[in-house]
Image (cartoon, rainbow, N blue to C red; front, side):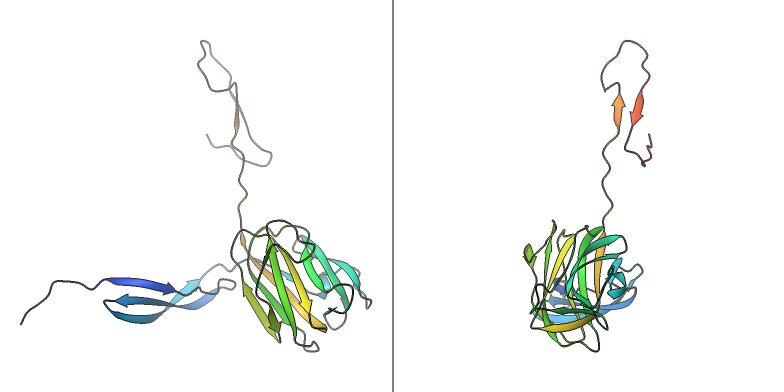
Length: 219
């Protein structure tokens, strides 16, 4: 019998993205070609640290009443605007002067997932998210696919965007919660300054190193 020493070349063609918004065991699949045969294999991975999130409910809306108007919400240190009124949740109606939710403060990182949960008393309506690197007071930036929210609907998000604008259409509905999952970003700190500046000196110098307030210098 002839024995071949040649090994088949394995080329991955697709790896599914796991749900990183919650901790726990997740399943991904890897599709690859081995020779001329395409195979798909499931794998389990463990997500130890879930993505941080901001959750907006009627409890986060200041002075929320049963009158349609623009209100301010604040959740986990981030504020924004909602046009609606207080019902069994957050009621919005596209036939009124507005039917939106957006943030005026930046999310402390990059948005990775948007989840809208409809209240039991709500009606299935369409929602269209927009995301941007700068604040949005109307639809703009990058617009994601419009989806119906019949119970719980999510959008996966990529890019370096810290602002969102959610537009409801189709009539009145009641929303239980809006959750924004994000990838936390560590802010860059400016390099320390030296006094005197770098150079050649013919005498002993006392050097002072300064940095931004709240930072620690290791040298």
